[in-house]
Image (cartoon, rainbow, N blue to C red; front, top):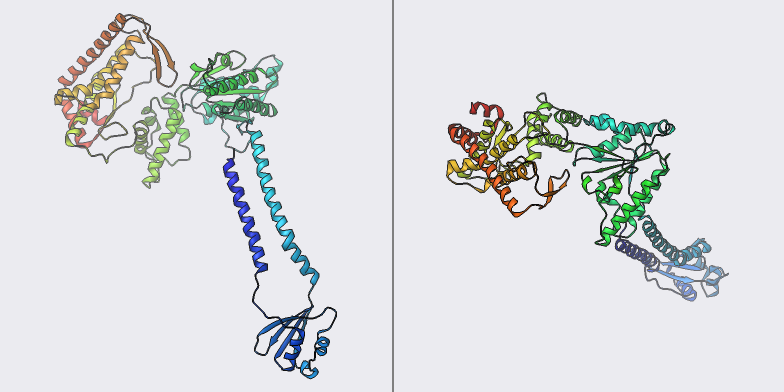
Length: 608
């Protein structure tokens, strides 16, 4: 909505301009050009007799006199009388009168009167009228905006929307099962009568669930592109405002517009912003959100069976949605979209490589192998960072090394080569990372090392990249214990080599403690038996959760003892590896100090 202060300032500025313009017009016509003396007809007759006059110009009743010395004067004659007769009557000599040059000019007095009237009366009224027109127009616009405040802010794409690049299932890599499930929606939008004749009811609502950046919005756009129907896209947060009734009004406006364009798709992104579980009213904002949700539930129930409108919604927080949204008849179908596997990542990278000049050495399979856990948005960012790096270096193509560097930049941050480390710090970081890598290499259940570096990136002073041999959805206890041992490898190396530890191990120790506690409390893999401890509320796809304690103090003591036992077991295993392979450890650390970065091939040669 336009700010009223800005509108007022604009109006004041326009008024000032109008009055300045009026003042300039009046000043132009009222300022005398020159002070010219006026003479009577008698004086003019005497001047003619004394041969002082060179020229007389007659314009109606006005007389302009030019003397021999080029000075000027003015005079007036009586109406209806000729100038020559008047001069003779006032004693001018006829012979000397003939010696004076006379010039007669016709002037349209009526035109001058009209012009004067227009300038003096009509023009000011016209300018004042323009001023009030602008004022009323702004007031009308403000009122219209006030009434439009409850209208939906949905963007329209597709057949009747503004032109936009069409997206189909071919532009969405991977997600084979998800696309097969959604093809029914596409077929219904293309051929609704086929289903209605059989008495079938297509799901009114489809809820896309998945972590951020996994392609929920892209998949919704692809459904609209495949079915070639209008696509209404709106964010859940755009419904709720500080004014009461705006959210529900916008919901009504959205569905009213959708009914005029059916068959169509309505896509609500971030549904959890308005679809949270209803509870006790804490504030006006909370009440407004609940009214918006109630209106959404009402509109979804209001569809007739022959309505050809399908609601798509996306969220990464299905655990906080109101149960009324998820019951049959509303969001009937739930499609879970997971992070892509290695083959899907390669397909996604191939799509993002379109239109980009790739070098001959580019291997998208290797890039996919190095990006486990990356979403589609992350992979797009990798290619974008590589393209930026290539342009910055004035390279004609994107090389494999630029892609690999882009992975680390997205994962950890920009390199901090300008940061100056002391020789002691460099040695500590080199041994710390060498300890991680050596323990990971020696444990069969740990992930193989891909790269070691002591060049700082982001918050990390150094890093060891590990890539799993194969992607797995399940982990056993031995793999968790190996991961703890690898995390403790850097801390133990500092203690073995330098006799003391530094603050660089704090994050490793935090992760190791968290894994050990999950083994006991969450996964039931400890000596305490297949029991979970604590009531957990998971924040799905956000990597966080809250816990309510539901066990006694005596049990808490046993949990702490079991966590310490797991940590100490992993510590002894890692310490034994580092002590037995001290020469290899020194060799890895020495190479790191010299080269700063070790790739997998060189690392494997060193440990052999």
